[in-house]
Image 1 (spheres, rainbow, N blue to C red):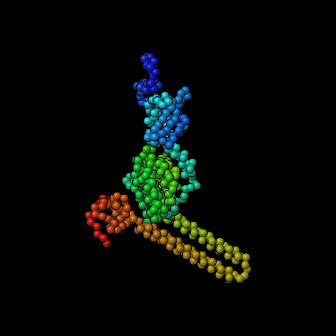
Image 2: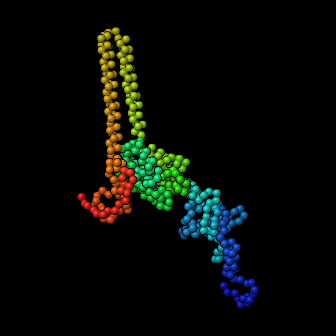
Image 3: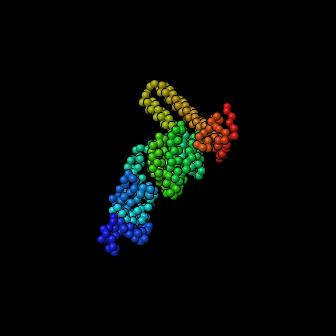
Length: 406
């Protein structure tokens, strides 16, 4: 805007643009970067992704804007009524001559950003019914194979494998290694759950890691992981942290275990307990058979007392009853011994089929280093390709020098 000639010499006369720039310079010199506490109101997020709102207290308010790049870094969702601490700079929006706070960073007041994000996610998933008991499935009594999604190093995988082998030696344990913390961990866990859906005979999944801080366990509070667990066709046992740690994965899973060891305990029965149950049921069946025989004998005796004649027939019936009782007892004992032998034989055969038992006999598992796929045919390999070898105890890295086809 240009001033009329008669006003150009008037001292102190400013255009609106000059006044705005003057105010901007004064604000920048006086305030610079500042921290502001206030309540969010009138929040708008248009298609541009920028957030426009007001920060207010009981006496005043100021317009605020948080551009998309800064807003997408927030781990929680901004909402009206939320009390926040904002870092930014005060400036004048020249087009309207309005005072405005340009926010670079923001966090909730009183509740940590991660904790708030966690509570918001829990509320959203609970509203969708993902935590409902009605959608959770029972675990199989005796799974053919157990899929394990966890880090390949650390105590968690060791505890789960040892517990599985101790409780049911014949079970197959298929480990899909993942990162369990850090930026890439959620995507790793989601991919592992999807991979194990395609493995035949996997009847239950154990997904978890050892304990840690909220930040360490954050991958298991990720929405992508929660939805992958909910969508799994295979029942999932969550085994995250210690007993006091409860993550979103715990709430979505079909069963929650307090520790990785407890998860393995839930996955398979203890063969010793089953043997004790068989023995107890054997005694119960024997006692039941004896009661039946006793009642039959009592009934015969009762009838014998009532019958005056023929006594010879009654005595013969008594003898026959005793003989049948002894035969029934012997047959029942034989059936129970056979059942026990079959259970022990099945356990031994399952143990013989375990991939871990194969490794103990001197074999190894060869995988491609680049994608972890199992190599079953030398023709699949190329010279120079890197391999990962898994032995009964430990592993090694190797490179293909030459390929010999069968």
